[in-house]
Length: 277
Image 1 (cartoon, rainbow, N blue to C red):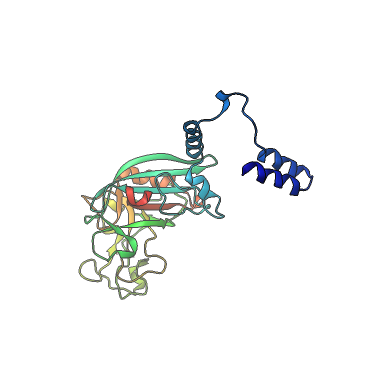
Image 2: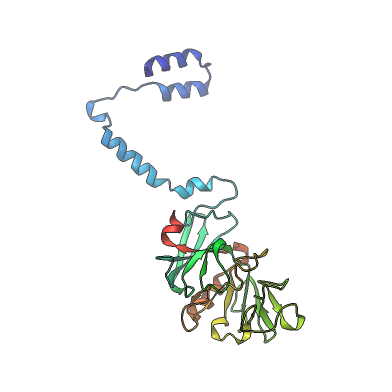
């Protein structure tokens, strides 16, 4: 069958250089010796090596507008404009601790820069679209990081940074048009209280955990009311968070110094198995 097909192809193809090259590829070549004939085992071995050389992320990169997949993260496509990704992985959905890794992309691919222990919400993780406000769960998903703040001066980040005063709040009032936004209390538009239903966070009074913080763009900029507000990457508090991700104070300062607005940073959060699927 193969020789008949090849002969027919030779008769049909025009005598051009391209056709001649194709015929060379199609024509069966007799092995010089029995030792030169590849066995089934050696063929499978060659295929395995080739497959391991071309990573799935390389195939994904051929899609216009997408970067290669971050190692361990197959669930979410990364835009080609993004060159910094923070990956937060937990062992299970109920875990309150995780590992945070900073990834940087250069011409040769993604490289792990730093890796530290992190804390999650006191109720673990939940897929972001299923999250409910005040649940104590950290939203799993892929989110941009476009804004940061802190009680201390900007440590050197190039993303938008606000040094908060006593008048800075993060609005979590479900009735407010400014839900899930930073706003000055003096400008009104939400309930000025820090406890009870529809309360908000007075950022400068939240202690050293908000000395440095990056805003996770979960449920932003077009929020679903009741899904949650005020999800940050911030410095350690006294224990698990209320739904944020936290790292040590010195590590959080390093994160902000590392984040670069020109690299369009993102944060990816989830269980190890879920992100890899």
